[in-house]
Image (tube, rainbow, N blue to C red; front, side, top):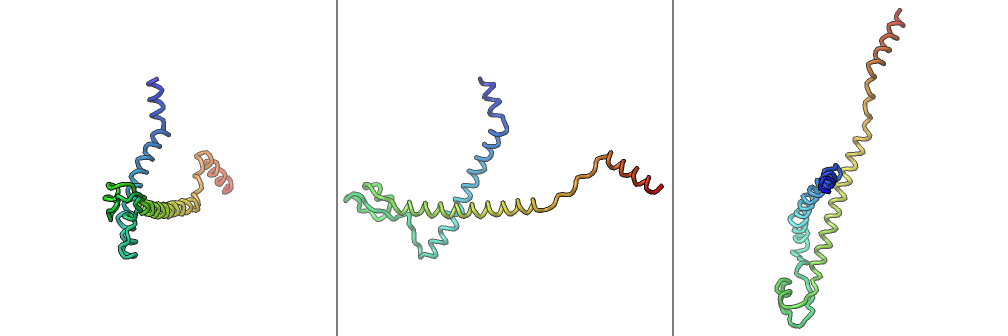
Length: 138
């Protein structure tokens, strides 16, 4: 059974999948940083410092805090601002991925559009061509 598992784990598909997951996680961290560290601050600056992450609705009278972290400690809250922020992050990430995939597809089409050089004739065909040419000259 161990031998079968080793054969399964070493198949190309499993290794390719593992590499894809690792690269995907690294790319996800890059896109998350792009959104959180570059795009969202620009949006916040354009909207006058608007930050949705601290918008909440208290669900009990014991909640008197003005920021979300303290309010969660005091009682139940409906943190709709965090939801709005995550939705905006998702839309931005989806748009960035759309642009990246679109560019990759354009590059792929450009490579496919370039005509491939005709394959070089085999040695036998070259020899027969030379014989034919010599016979034409004679």
